[in-house]
Image (tube, rainbow, N blue to C red; front, side):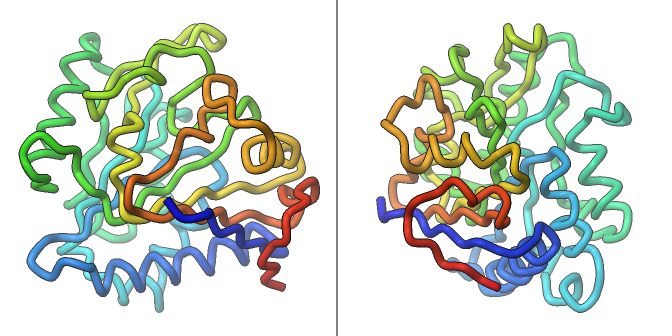
Length: 254
C-alpha cells in the first residue's frame, strides 16, 4: 500500500467539484475495457454536494452512466424514504435527475427484518454484476467513504463485530452506542478496491482526522485506520477546517 494522498481545499463546495471531476474522469476511462465501471458510495450530509455536482452538466454528460454499476457502502436499518436513509439522500441529490444512473444503482435493503439474508443477497448482486475471480471480493474501481467523529467509516464502528469479519463482503452490524443495526461493506470488500476516497469536512472532524492520519495505529478504536487497500490507493479530500489540526505537509489546493 502506498502512502495516502491528502488534498486540502478551501471549502466543501470546491472539494466536491474537484472530486466530481475526478470521478467523471475515472468512469469515462475504466482500467478494464471489457467490464463495467463499479463504484460504491457512502451517504450522509458531507457527500451531498458531490452527488449534486454529478447530476448536472457538464459533469453528468461526461460519465457513461449506462456502463457504470453503482452500489452502497452502507445503509441504516430504515425504509428507503426515511429522512436518515443514505439511499434517499443519493436519490434526491443525483438519481432522480439522472435516470441511467438510477437504473444501474443497487440499494441495500436494510429495512428488511432478516438483515443477514438481505446482506447475503447483496453479496450475490456484487458477485453477479462485478464478476470478481472465484473466491475473491469484487475490486471496486472507486469507493467513497466518510469519517465519523468517533473514527468510524462505512458502518464499521468502534468495538462492533463487523471489524473482525474477514470472509463476508456485506454484513449486518449492530451498533450498541446507537442501539441500532446497519448494513455495511466489510474490510475485505473495501480493501480490494482500486481507488478509495475519503471526504471529510468541517472543524468538528479536525481532531479525529488528526488521530486517524497521525496518531498510533489503533483500528479497534479508530476503524478508518484499517482501510488499507491491498493493491489500490487512498486519497483524503478534506476542507481547510477539517485539516487544521494536521501536522503533515499537505497538498493545499487553494
